[in-house]
Figure 1 (cartoon, rainbow, N blue to C red):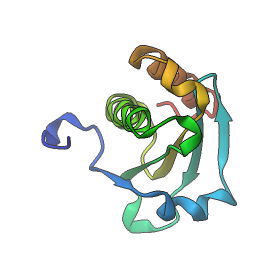
Figure 2 (figure 1 turned 60 degrees about the vertical axis):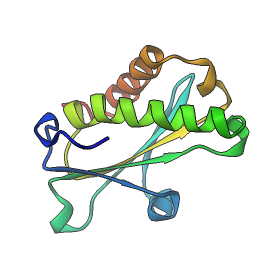
Figure 3 (figure 1 turned 90 degrees about the horizontal axis):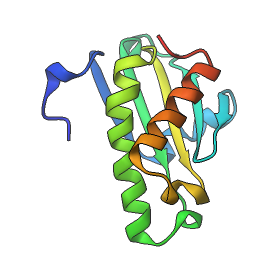
Length: 124
C-alpha cells in the first residue's frame, strides 16, 4: 500500500484507527456529499506539521463485511491519490462512509472528495 515513497507529495502519510480521531469530534470542519462525509482538523502538535493523517470510519450501516472492506479499499486509494497530492499539510482528515458509499465507483468517490476539499478550502 505505501511502498512507493516518492509518490507522495507530503513527508509522510499516517493511517490511524477511529479511536485516534475521536478528539476531532469537538473542533472540526465538516462537510458531506452524496457518498461520503468529510472532516478536517488542523494538527496541534508541531512535530506533525508536515504530516497528513487520514482516518476512515465505515460503520455497520454501510453494509456487510465485504462491502465495508471494499469501501475502505476505495477510501485508501482516493486518500493516496487526492489527499496526499492536493490537500494541505498538517491536518487530520477523516472520511466517513454513509449508506450510499457502496453504490459509488472509484471515480465518483474521487469527485466527491475533491468537492469536499474545495468546499472546506483545504485544496491546494
